Length: 237
Ligand SMILES: [Zn+2]
Image (tube, rainbow, N blue to C red; front, side, top):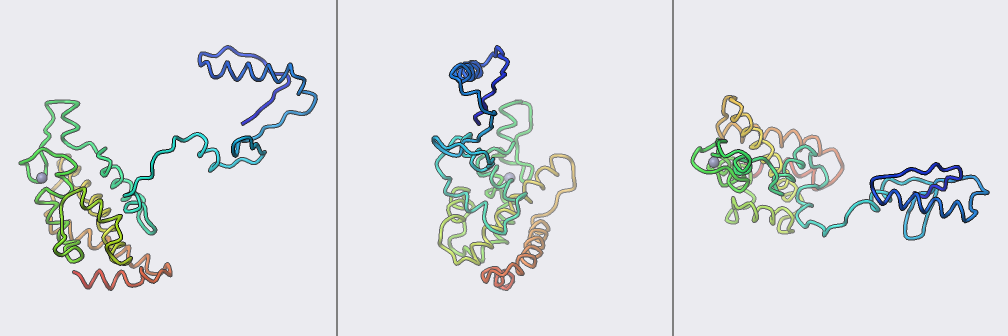
């Protein structure tokens, strides 16, 4: 933003960049640009300043650009559910506070998986190598993956952004993944806080119900591949 203030009062700032801005304002003031009314302009591009504010353009200027994450489209896709996508995104980036991370902060914390009690809880284990999670995951997607069925976190990540499946099946696999991760994470938190554990078969049924409700809701969006989704989901159960 450019803001030329003719009756500007100078301040001393701790951050040197603000003092540089003060110097620039003084320079423009001395340069005799102040016989017109002051205006505020927003930077839209190199050397391009306009009076209209755009949050998109401003965000593009202040953010740091990184390489596009290939698997993001397997997490943020049309008709996904934001709260499920969010947990899956955090899990995929290995940022959930699983047992291994908690132990790094406090060695006395119980870092064992609360589902099977035999192994240190990591994202890799919790989703989906733990026998409990494998059972849930298998009940949901074995019908799609068949011989390619895997519980490897990286392989699953690759499958949900690749183009190996038709659009309807891909939507169902992606959606199953995000509901499964969200549900397993909730079950894990519930167990850690003393709630009654649910058997894997019960959790699978709840996830199945959640998916069916969502498919009913998205059926009416007018996308042909979503209209078929409920029928295909019933077909592989
Ligand atoms: Zn486990």
